[in-house]
Image (tube, rainbow, N blue to C red; front, side, top):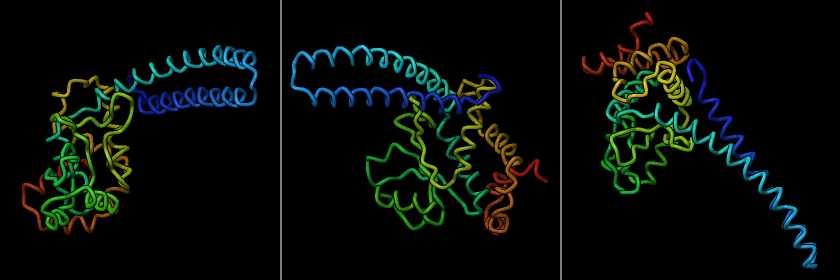
Length: 248
């Protein structure tokens, strides 16, 4: 879909699938209700035959809705896949810039159950925890101290799965959700399906354009950002400056 909004199509397809399923559930409940209201076997047979015809049609309709959902979700998944090192480095810099506090990639977990995820965490919080268990992870996430990206067993971050579900936890950072969806649409519009065609510099360039349309993100933590940068190395500062090239 060129110069469109596939995310909105994905949301619509998911909604249509839910509605189609709800119709089936409603009809099943009505059938059960009528069956429970009679003890006559002949009448029960008639009721089942009546509803089976209706249910067959509803299931066929839902099957079409689901095929459409899977088709759109498959495209969104493919264009929403990125190499993990690129994404973690970028989001650490992007979060640090907007929030005015340094965030860093964090990959060490106490529990095997969460080892398949990548964490972007506040550096200050990182110093306080040698290892993170699930309970601590959940608490820090709710406090806005970290975000979680599901990387599975590969070296890839898939922001969406093949049925349209999100594979990230951004918490209160709603601008990250919008950023990701705009980034995916940008790849679709410019036919950048090949994951090797996306570099860290591409993400910085796109983020720069995104921030130009969201001046509130630039100014809201400006003082904290300037103070943070005073304590960083030249290499780290240069990372953040990439997000300001066109803003001055």
